[in-house]
Image (cartoon, rainbow, N blue to C red; front, top):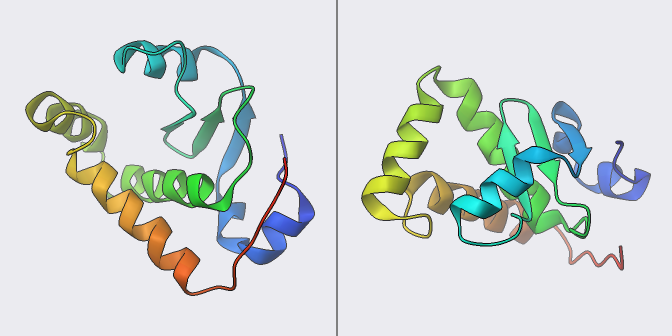
Length: 116
């Protein structure tokens, strides 16, 4: 899938990732969290969005940081899983880093709203 032109124009850095809707990865991620599906899950350069997930910049930028984390180390997937086992999803340092990243990127730009 391709992101809407207005989203890419505002956040061109999102252009380095590939985006997919639905599929097995968001369901597996959701099961790991005790939910039907995860809003999104990143595997290397591909961000998998659940079918009903809105295209909001905060989530897209958060997942983009995971794309970068995958690129920083071949051991990232194992380190991410270990962090999740040790600290849980919400306190996983990679999740906290991705949240900070998205927050900083959003703060550097004017507010953006999208109804999708």
